[in-house]
Length: 78
Image 1 (tube, one colour):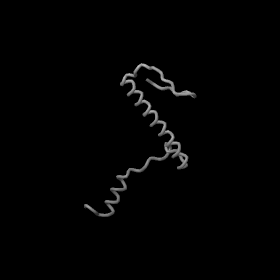
Image 2: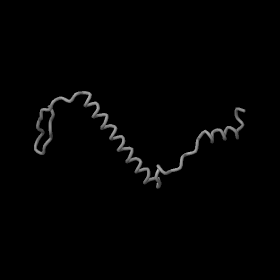
Image 3: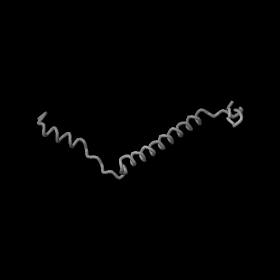
Image 4: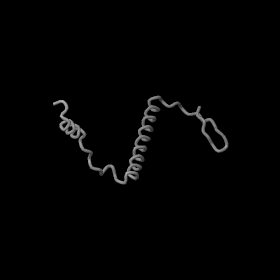
């Protein structure tokens, strides 16, 4: 039995049971949509806070280059 809230009171409504696979799929879809929406809001917030669009930002340099350069300069493991 499902209870529907109205302004005056909660009234019971009879509904056929939802098959578990349909319920699971609906839950997965709701979670996915919530994650996408959250990511969009976070991206917009980061854009406002950082002052530039992260999609248009230049690619970060490869950290292995800095690591190799530091190893070379230190003379370690040669």
